[in-house]
Image (cartoon, rainbow, N blue to C red; front, side):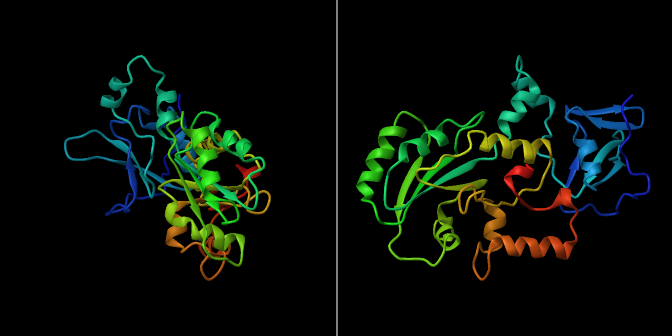
Length: 272
């Protein structure tokens, strides 16, 4: 028998939060008498993370589970299931939950090791980059960058762009901010040309956000700017590093809201 993760001390609100999930008709939702669970383990995970779970019923409908304060990205209905006929449904879902990561390669005064950096982006496990951005400090001919990038990416369907700085900035974080306009929805991750991305970078991020249900807004670099990764919507809302580092803004917010460790927004790669 599945365990009941409903919180009996929580009274259903008269008005729902702006964000909530109605599990009714989700193919991964399970009910055994008055006990609710999820084939993906999400009901248990949401309960552990402190989200409120309660029974609700629309007029003329059966009771169903609702989760207050969060939109579940895994909710799928019977129509979706039919469209995936013959496929493993969990694998099909996982493929759709691609966090859409843009890879930003910072180019200094040399293209030494440039090819290895591109290969480490192209050869990602499970998912491919959403796009690749070549961020030049203006010390290498932009035509050389375009020629090398084109020769390696022309046989892929990964979109890429090359942009060079026309002025100096004070720090690596200022450099990151200069290229924010090239970020797309999802995540952006940075690395210096000549170094290599972790081949399981997107895989780790997907597991953290979609299986472990972590709220990942910013990941600290593991070697200076290398590995620095942000979630675009949050980064834009906080105005990046303008005024003070985005990392410090998030730390302040976490402390102000007294967020528990498992619901924090700022992470290190080794924690994911």
